[in-house]
Length: 450
Image (cartoon, rainbow, N blue to C red; front, side, top):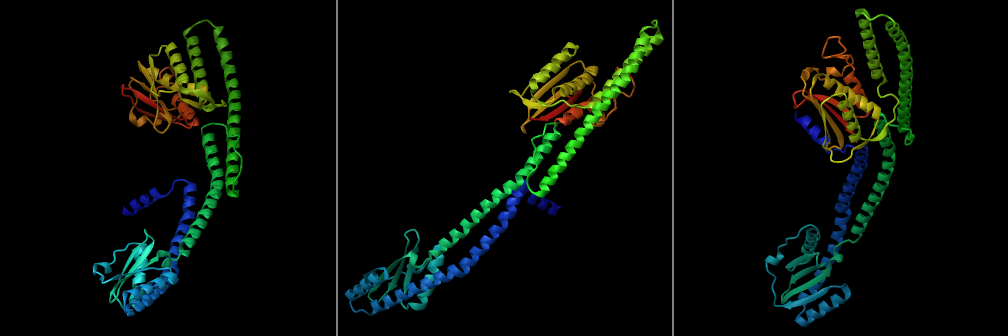
């Protein structure tokens, strides 16, 4: 259980895109190499250079302190200090009778000041016999050494560059600049490699929503082009199958309706009797069944998506339902015009099927629409009818399944209304499901991408 949580936690930290993960693969070893090189540089080169510079500075301070301590008068000490300032670029002055406090010998350095100051103290301990105190202040860019002499305190100040290797900054700047340039080139290259994959994903998504993908072109690496070619071949096969099915159904429709038309004409020539009326009713039922089968197999047909305002489509569907005697209410909660690529005829057929099913059992129908937080359109068709058992919410989307198990087409239909609606919604890249209506009946939910 703990391992699963750790894996989920690690997965949550991983980038979700291929571009992000590719960058992580590139950046991680570069950062590790940078850290390793930096540590090696400071452990070997920088520390050795600092030690050598501190050794040289401590030697100069020791020589000056010994000469000054052997001088007999303060004037001689000042003369030694003046010569050292002129030749060694130091700032030296003498405080007659002064003493170094013990607190001044305690050091409270942090970071770079500690590394430089501690190295200088170690070298002074090796070469200087007099008591001393060191003050390192990188803000002022000076290092001060106070040496206790017999007649006072000798203050020796030197610029921090005497103890700090300037080449360190240059080296680090060069390393990180080179890494930045390499990473920039890698990012640009990786973006060009990922772009064809992203375009392939967009084309597949558009095709799944029934939209045109004629502008898709093969590009990128060999494997990406192979995947793109496989997608184009799949698209061609699917379109060919749809065209063949549509042509076949057109022929089947003609072949089935021709004998039914002859039967209807023959019955019209006969005298009215109960048997003739029964046969006419059977013919009407057969025509309804044939239309239902053709609508189901035809699906959205070859209708091309067009930019459509959803409010206008729902208004047309609602007006048509009212003309047929339905008590229906349309409520628009979107607050703005929602325009999406849509197959208008197919979507009207979808809404007509849902409203037609609801009107058979309900006295009133409510249609509401709003925009979701994830930028999708959600449409709810609710009624106050008896509803259906919750365990049949999935079953009613199966072709030819009917809640009313009688074969009466006037009440139960042929069980293709909701399957056709589901196929049309899926062809638009959407989702359809059932819920319990707050009005007591059934609620059909449709969610479409914008």
